[in-house]
Image (cartoon, rainbow, N blue to C red; front, side, top):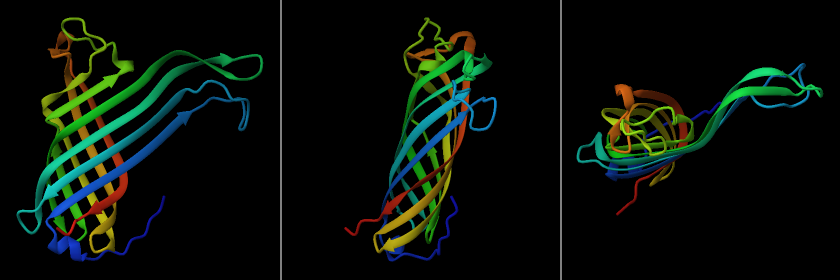
Amino acid sequence: MPCSFAFGESTAESKQPLRLVSNLTFDRFEQQVKQEVGGTKGQKLVEDNSLALHLSITYAPLEYISIGFFARGDIGTRSAGNFERFDGEGAALITDETGGAYLEFWLGPLLAAHYKTFWFELGYAVLGVRSDDARADLQGTSGEEESPLQTSPTIAWLVALGAGLPVLDTLQINLRLEYRVRYYDSRGGNPLADKVVHGTQNLTPFFGVVWTPDF
C-alpha cells in the first residue's frame, strides 16, 4: 500500500523523554490450484494467517538515545500440503497437509536511537517462547512434544527502522519495519533432541502510533 509522508520535527519529540509505541500488523497468504482462472475452489496448497502486536516504552537519558522495554506477541495459523488431483467436480485435493496454530511471545530490553521523527531500534528477548502445533517433530531430550519452544540465550534479536508523522504535539502516526531472528534450542526446560536448533526469521512492516506524554 503506497504511502506518502511529510516528515518534520515534532515538539514532543524534542522535549518529552518518555515514549510509548504501539504497532500492529496483519498478514494473510494463500496458494491454490485450479483447472482455470476462476475455477472450482478446492483445498488450499498453502494458507497462512497472522496477527502481531508490538509494544514498547522507552526513556531518553540522552537527546538522541532511549532505553526501555518491549513486548511482542504473535498469533496465527498456517498449513501447507501437496497437490494430489482434481475431484469429479474439478476441485483440488491436497495430501500430506501439515500445520496448525501458533502463539509466540517476546519480552526484553530495547535500545533506540532517534532523530526528529526517525528512529532505529535494537531489542533482545530475555523471554522468548513459542507454542506451535506444527512443531511436534522437534522434541526435547525427555520426549516433550507439546511444551513451548524456548529461544536461544544468545540469538533472539530484533532490529527495526521507524518513521513518524506528527499529528499532535504528543502523538505521531508511525510506520515501522522490523527484522527479527531467533533460534529455538529447548522446550520444557530441556535441550532439543540430538542437539538440533530451529532457526526462524521475519521481515515485518508495522503500522501504529507513538505517544510522548507531557508529564
